[in-house]
Image (cartoon, rainbow, N blue to C red):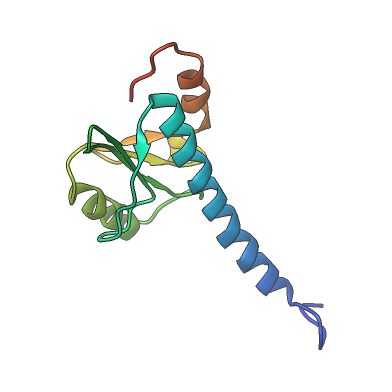
Length: 124
């Protein structure tokens, strides 16, 4: 059954879980990078960027988190456009970087963060 009157539908639950997981993954990587690299988090709203890290009031790292296995050309172009609006190193965080290549943007996955965490003075 997809749904029963008075109960929450499976589709609704799936939608909420996907949205919440994305939010929590973004928050995790933003805070992780901030602590790891010793930079402060900034909020960039126009355009909205998932990760913005600053050092001495200057944007150093910009990032987008896309927690899915593949991206369309349109999604990649939108990411590139957003990140290129600002100066700084650009990253995108995905579950598996082997499936995604974006010229001019450092594509990272969990294995990269495991390596970064083991380095004394990590750099991106």
